[in-house]
Image (cartoon, rainbow, N blue to C red):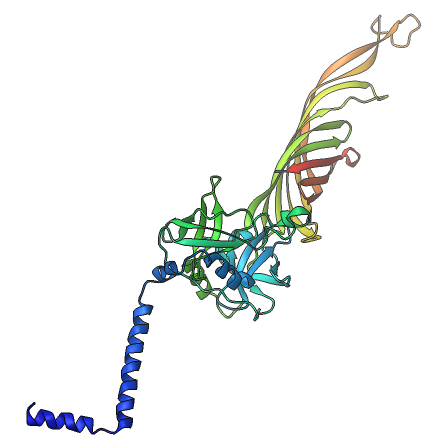
Length: 421
């Protein structure tokens, strides 16, 4: 060693022991940071897959079950959601909560509370709910954005949840889990063979590390399931402002019905009627209905003794829908005002007195006789109408009054019993 180099080495060796200790500690910190960054830079999907084993589903379920909620609509529908971003917000599928009314959510421990929709993404079928109070004793589920075809995934939800209320299925279905794999994905959706069913909609699809990769959305008949990728949920949550904007509902076609109808005015008619409603915000309703009826025979002292007539009807009415007995026995009552049109076609036979010798009515030499006379029916018109329909379970019951403004005593009353489809 050259003399100068030797002197430097000797000077280093003569450094205080405390300084040498700090130097070693600094070296260790640098190495630790380097190792941490190396682990952090490993793709998340790869790290999640490394932790996938036979116990992954159990670990994810136990860690996450407290964040899963059963969403109950006041009209009787249900779905699934989960705590996301904050202890006061739940992410779910938009079609689960599109009614535009308040909702109930139920946690696995039995706790219930109300919720309202505060943000929606109709393009990707997502909605964000705000709970009445924050839930501080349950985990807020993290997002797992990265995907790989073939990676294992788990679903937790409430498939056919109502079927477990009593009987041999008590305690099953609700908050249950299934597993599968990511079959394919694009920018917005992922495809999976994980078993999903009605009631799973809005529930989380997990990676092995417990992060949510998607929101269960729909299922094809041959068990191919689809979920909205979680980055769309992150985008929706990012748009949520501090100012609360409550979602009021959508405009949709509902309550298609087919049933029997009876009308009564100067004659009685019976037949079939079909119709439906365009419902806005689950409160305003535009009803349309078509009917085909036949005249009923009846005993009468009138000169008309028989009628073979057909009546076609068309009704349009605008009304307000009120919801009674929400959650327990949802029943809608729709009070409407509108108009009704009718068209009568057919023939009727009446009795008349005629005389064998024309021109001598009432004379002693006349021979009166009773003869039948047949004439065509050509009637119809338009009338103002008020109606009340009550819809519950699979039935639609209705009553309508169609006013004859010229002859009120000849106004028509209509009773309807239909089945929803």
